[in-house]
Length: 69
Image (cartoon, rainbow, N blue to C red; front, top):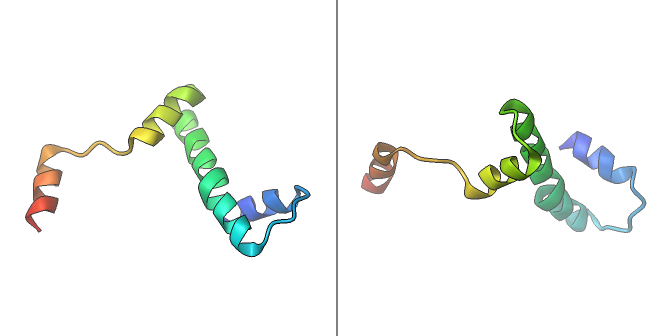
């Protein structure tokens, strides 16, 4: 979070604290996750983005356990 805030601070903007937080969490953080996913799994950025958007894959037993509780 600190690194992303530093990246944002290097860019000339007039964002309030709330706007900065929303930008970091809504734009920079997802982009960092997508980039990391592409590096870890040796994927292209569009493929990593598709995986990020689709979310995690849960095994049927995990879903049943969650629904039971």
